[in-house]
Image (tube, rainbow over all chains, first blue to last red; front, side, top):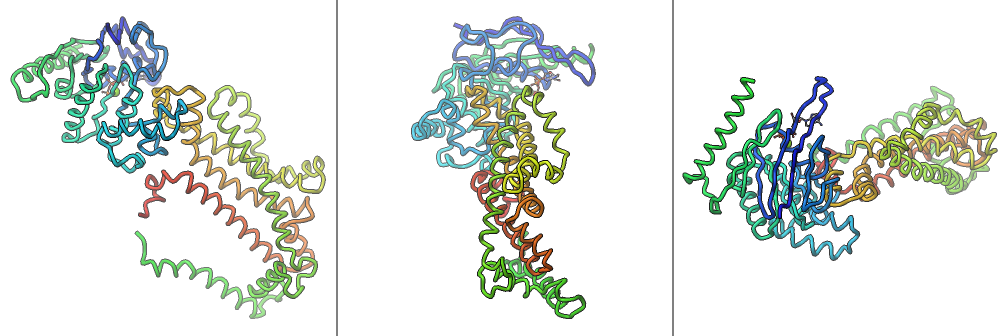
Length: 257
Length: 270
Ligand SMILES: Nc1ncnc2c1ncn2[C@@H]1O[C@H](COP(=O)(O)OP(=O)(O)OP(=O)(O)O)[C@@H](O)[C@H]1O
Ligand SMILES: [Mg+2]
């Protein structure tokens, strides 16, 4: 059974400054199956964040629909965990309270919240930093707090918008490995937005390549490379070449249009 | 950025000491009649008698300082307390709800430019000569800074934090309580600090005009009796109490906002 069903989804913005309609998404059809790790890959401005916001329920589509486990999305909810591009942690709460924020809203006992938070803090490798404030941690550590916060809700679906975009290469690779490990352990459906080809091909069970203006899904590529993935292997490079061609063709289209 | 600790501690006293010493010398030089600008030492003696009744030099005020101070303090606390409660409550409501904003905000904005002191005649007509007009004025003076800062704090709450809260399953009520209000606290405290300053200013004003007790009353009354040493002692008392009330708010703020310690310039020290 499909977890996320997106059908005939369009989103238009009215750009007041240029007094023009911007077609951010145009007739998107996409099915993400249970336990899939789908990467949304595309150039800047192609509508990746817009699509993710609509699945998360932060924005409404102009046309079309999104269902999660058969239920239409009407607003944000704890069945869909979101990991933001900027970690978006509450600066006045220590790490463990940020991780357990979901439980705080539901009014759980402090001791119980603390114990549950600890499991997820350990899972993302932040043991020992429970009482630090976000301002006392590095960007990558904050991002892990954001991941732990989403995982704690035990959501059906996790939506991630370029969560490792601001990290250096080394930390990014560590975090990618960590994410794959957590995903394999935890199971769940993940939609991961990125503009990195290597990142998409390293992480995904499938990659949806998008084109810009209007934002469309160019091709859905299924990946069955073994894990851990070797980014120097011939198959990997074969795929990479293919994705690059897709992106280049789009650019050529856009430039000649 | 810090200077050597010892020098740092000493240099902050240099200017006050020079000012007081110069003033003492000037007063004693006889350039002005001594009564017009009493020397600091004279002020200190008058002050001491006002507080401890040491020699009765301040006559009816001798030993009454604590009662005058409590009278003023009570007015400040009452007016400021009401202003803080109402200002924060209304500020959060106006900042959060477009409807409340449309209904209430224009009226408040129309009242705001009227200086609180210009309410004195009406306050006396409505409440008579006693505590009430003073508390009313203090309330007016403290209310608007607290209200405006609260509105600002609520409205500038990071939209992404609210998204994060909605994502973890928060409804409107929870988002307000667990995200918007904590995020607005730095602004709210800024408003409270401005508010407590206005509160002292208006207490003294009200006591000079509409009440027959308190530090402001002593100040104005001694002026009529040409006791400028007592005028200065009253001014110093008011300044000290204003400073102390601000200190209390800052101490509470430091506790509540301790998470800000290393996110601001102020907290860079260690
Ligand atoms: N609120 C808005 N009002 C008007 N136009 C918008 C708005 N949000 C997005 N857009 C437009 O929609 C298009 C897609 O934006 P979106 O943020 O989804 O891109 P993206 O693929 O996430 O890009 P990036 O990789 O840079 O984050 C852009 O052309 C942008 O200008
Ligand atoms: Mg984006």
